[in-house]
Length: 247
Ligand SMILES: [Zn+2]
Image (tube, rainbow, N blue to C red; front, side, top):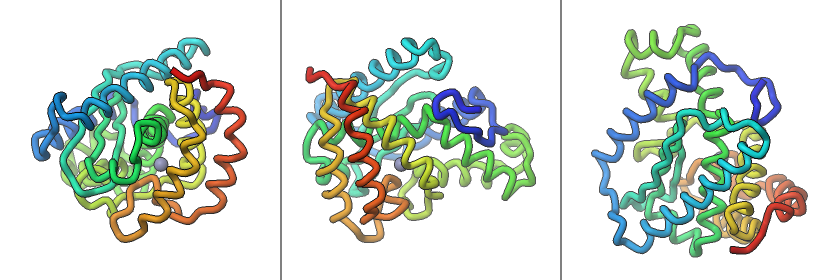
């Protein structure tokens, strides 16, 4: 039973092991890409939004007596130079935004919507769920450390597919519709608690839907013109707004 989602999830991967693997993959990614330094305005914005959302999430789970959800988290927010419209959060709180995203977010509040969504995938352990399914389907259900020692390349590729890292965004395993809904809803709450108007999600997703094309980011992985998603966002908005105080 997942503490965050209240849903039964397949979990063969201990969070601590996944965080260790994530840290290694994250460091490899940062070495292989051009990371903007803090003097860049967009990089500073990513860091500012990220820290505010991380603080909101910490408060959200501490208030519920569920601080354990964030065990092992050491937040980092980086921006990399890339045309791709993409962003992700790895287990353990390692967040990367690609500069291609800014053309669509267009403002700080929309960036908060995206980061809230990506971080929600991580804290809801959606990646762990996908990795567990991958270990069952591709490697016969072995444990993560066994998979890493016996089939390191395949295991790393699975990780990259689950988390949408690397340049081939299209190669990512899409989240399930249920996972997307959970990320949308928790993401709105986190953004609202961080002082960003959750209502920006509606025009933001409309701009996203208009992007189209082959290079769609993970948050469009279900369907770009998904009317169901928009309807669910609207339905959830009154709940999200309860958490919103403009800062
Ligand atoms: Zn998503």
